[in-house]
Length: 160
Image 1 (tube, rainbow, N blue to C red):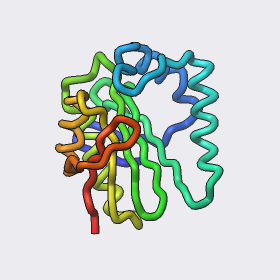
Image 2 (cartoon, rainbow, N blue to C red):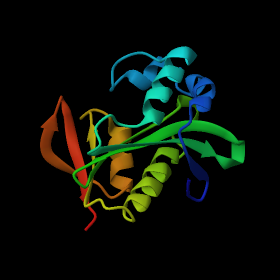
Image 3 (cartoon, rainbow, N blue to C red):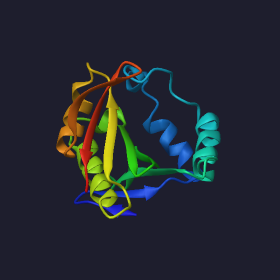
Image 4 (cartoon, rainbow, N blue to C red):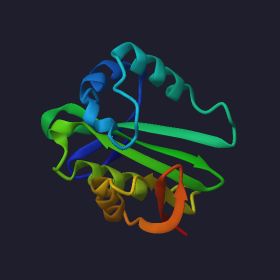
């Protein structure tokens, strides 16, 4: 578990799928990432795959749900995929909880934890029009680069 002032980042479990399906149900969350919200059953299957871990032993999949302690409920997710000492991170916060600094706080907590791991770079890929995610990346100490991947800009922060 990773704790911040208001949040606990809890290791993702299959049992989180039903509540998270509600948190992530707004189609607007997919504006920049594509796709549509998962049904509770589909999210359950996805969480089973994520909890099992990467089939590639050279890659780690680390996933957390975001617990907002004051409301005693899950409000989003953060993740890190680590390979070759680089952590690719991502975050999503349910629409009702956006605009409250939760994604930034969770991302800063995750990056802080990653500084204790054998990771030398943290990176995120952000759609160029997704200003809220750019603000989250900035708050976590990542800087925009000139590198593009699949229509998204790479942001990164060296840790060592």
